[in-house]
Length: 69
Figure (cartoon, rainbow, N blue to C red):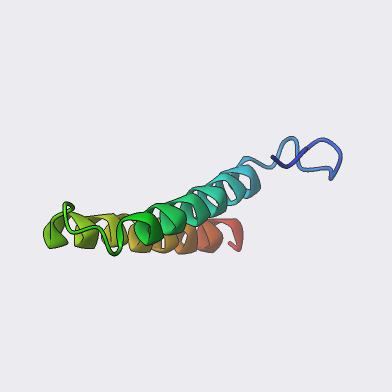
């Protein structure tokens, strides 16, 4: 976990959100890899899990746009 105080970002909440979302995306990628070859997990569920990760990236772009204004 990033120590936002030590890098001077304790009040930069968009930065913090982007950082946490990056961590969430990384963990979601691990989850997707974990179930990739599991036959018990329906293909539709696997696709939905991938869509969650894609959506995280889309939302990060929206936050970056706000930050860059």
